[in-house]
Image (cartoon, rainbow, N blue to C red; front, side, top):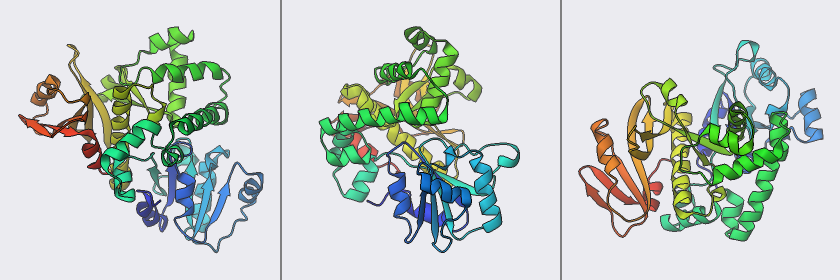
Length: 374
C-alpha cells in the first residue's frame, strides 16, 4: 500500500538527510524499503548491520541507504552529519526510528540545514478512503474496532488486534523504554498506561496520577514524557495566547493507537478524531513548514470545545465530537465571539443528515475525517 508521505520523502532525498519517525510497527520500514530499488537497508538492532555501520562499509552504488533505529547508536547525530558533510548525496540517506528523533541539539551535534523530518502516523479515514477506495463509514468502523495500525486493521479481527496490542505495548515498555532510558519500574508504567486508557478525553491531573501510582509528581511527568517520546501517547493542551500559560494548564492525553482506548464508543471516537487531527497538523508542518498546534478550549466556567487547530499562532478551526445526533454544543457559539471567522464543526458518529446553524456545521464524523488533508 502506498503511504501518504512517500512522494514527499522521495522529493527531499535528492538534497537532504530525511528523518522518518513514528510509532513502532506503524509502517516506517515498509515505506522506506518501497521508496527506491535497489537500496541498502541497515538495521542497528542487527549485529551484522551494526558492524557495517561501524565500519562504514555499506554499498554506495545504490540510490538509497536506509538506517533503521540509528538513534540507538551513541552520538548518532554527529555520525550522520559527518557522513553527509564528507560524502554528500547520492546515495540518499534515510534515517528511521520508533522514538522521537530529537534533532535540536547544541554544539557539534547540530544538523541545522541538513535534514527534513517526517512523522508517519497510523492509518486514518482519509488515507484509507484515498488509497484503498473504502467508504468513509467502513474506514471509521475499522479504526474504532481495531485501531489504525496496518497489521491489526487489515487482519480485521478484534481478537487478533487485542493480542497484537498486548505484544506491541509489551515490546515498547520492556524493550524500547529501556533502550531510551534506564527505567526499572516497568510495572508502574504499565499501570500508568492503563490509567490513561480510562481517562481519554478528560483532563489529566499529575498529582492524582502520582497518588494512584505512589510516586512523585515529577516521576509521573517524566514517565509521560517518555511515553510521548515513544509515540504511545500525545498531549492536547488548552489554547492560550501565551504558550507558557498553556503548558501550566492540565492536558488531555490521547493514544496513537485508537484501539488501545478503553472499550467506550465515545472515548474511542474522540481519540480517533484527535489522532486524525494530529496527523493532519504534522503533515502540514512536515510538508509545508507551517507551525501547527492541536489544542482544546476551556474557560473558568468549564465551557469546553474538544479541539482547536492553530496554524502559525492563529486559530484555524474548532471541532466538537459527539457519538449520537443531538443539538449543537453551546460552547461552539460561545467561543465564536473570540474567533468569529473560523469554521466550527460538530462531528457526530451517528448522524442522519448534515445540519448547520449560525455558522456552525454538524457533519457525519466519517465524512469530516475523510475531508482532512492526511
